[in-house]
Image 1: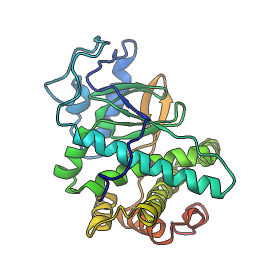
Image 2: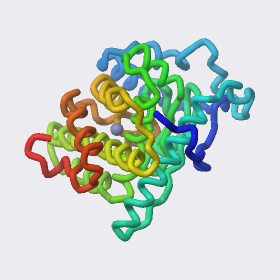
Image 3: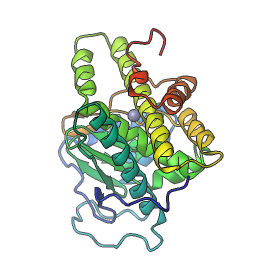
Image 4: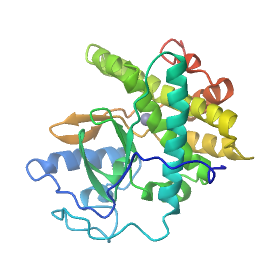
Length: 285
Ligand SMILES: [Zn+2]
């Protein structure tokens, strides 16, 4: 991906190296539920049950910045460029539609973070919280993307950001609100199907971004689309967040299949049209 010539976003909140207070009362339940979910998804529940993902964990009660961001901060810079590109793209697309795009914030954190949707550990993966309109990512996820999910490449990383920003777009368009209200009135199975459609639409929106970013700023290089498709087909859902007793509890465990994710990302990148991303109207999304 060609990104060095772009601009950096001013919407990145760097909370790396800042400790957060782990929830005290009832923390056990949230943690155990999360651990079960991670185990269910084929992950290592110890990642959740222990206080963090590695031995460099800071004490949970620490609340001030204790370490500066790493010296080689290319990854954070990259994320900032990608975010800026999504801002430019969506601002244009919203304007063409007569509406106003409000930039989301992107929070970089390490190990655990406090969001308006609750307390979350890195193990949940990157997520978007509609309550504070922020995307949360622990950059360690990109190591997993490369090593665990075998989806290397900078464009695969960009796709992850673009997918989360896609959830922000859904939020601004009122889609996620409508879906979560609907989910409360239907069966568990139907609610899951709605979650899948929401995820696939975020993939399609990520494709729409890539199409426009490339048209306006020529961001794509050979192999980039394949990188994103590999990522789309190999990572599980980033799991929508819902507040339950003050903790982040991922609520969608039924993800779109790899083929579905690839299909919708492709649809977005090929057409560049938001209207083509109506996963809710498709009989078989
Ligand atoms: Zn998602």
